[in-house]
Image 1: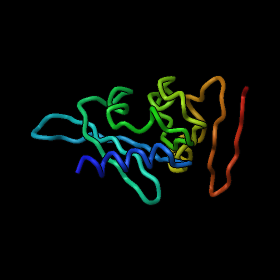
Image 2 (image 1 turned 90 degrees about the horizontal axis):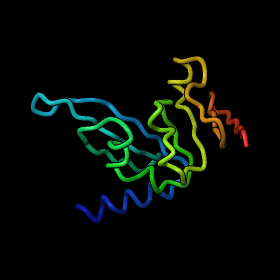
Image 3 (image 1 turned 45 degrees about the vertical axis):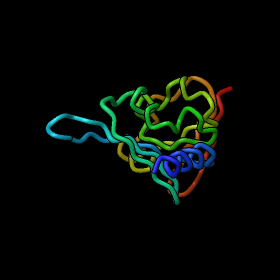
Image 4 (image 1 turned 180 degrees about the horizontal axis):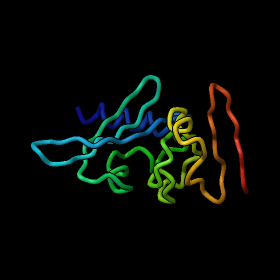
Length: 124
């Protein structure tokens, strides 16, 4: 199974756009975090004790991803440790819920996807 998981990671890292998210769940009564990374063809899920950057890194996708990451604007996804990313996009459902762009970095490109329209801003 491990070679298949490594191949999925490698393909996700090379994908032009990857959606990421996390959710909590209990395993034998203990809170764990399920981290996920997906495209329209691939999904990778991992379980970790941690929710933050450490938990995200344990999945093994974002540190090497050179494409755009789509997420819910949770601050951990903006981490400087994910320096190879070419941009960020906010999940449409979260954007509609929040109504504004939160936690946007001071510099670098940001991709905002709204109702099928794409706007790229750069504050370089």
